[in-house]
Image (cartoon, rainbow, N blue to C red; front, top):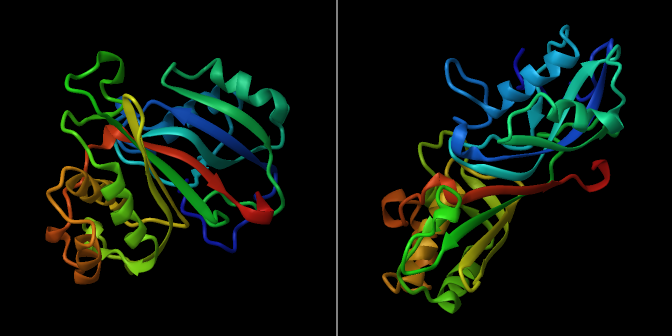
Length: 264
């Protein structure tokens, strides 16, 4: 069954109960969240694990966001309509599912969902972190988990540029092949330097296709002094994707969490 629920279908169908779960995964081995034919996905991997516990289950888990191939998740929120006949209580479901999941994905928490909770449509904020390995040489422990940037970066300039992008704007210049309306509200964008790993924190209610990776790519141009911070405002207003930085690699991106206001 499809996970594209209409907003009016917030309650589980008869014979099912809705659970809220928090899941983490290593994106290197998956073609993304969404179930696809002939390629491994996080959604299908979770579904197969649940079928070991409840063979009659029919509904796929619904995530707060759909990550692309190679993107990781530290704390993805999702809901799952499971048969009421499932004998495993919610507080024990995480352990039960993890016994049937590969090392690359784990359920961190499972509990009954609040009334009318929907992981996608109820979400009020989604948070991402992009990690940069800022060192002269690559590091094997960060291979596939952070983008290697051997050049020196100017964090102050990057944050000055980031400030100009926060707010409600048309982000068409940072999106890829987007056919939806392109106005979004960016709630937060901040560069946090570290001795080895730098983090770029991004927050918003929703994002366009590859928008986060386009924002990071543009900030990298600023950090490498190839673009003045003030130029990001001109890029934003232009709406022209060719003027912004290239999409950075997926393997440095992590879904870091979701908020639900009073429903969460």
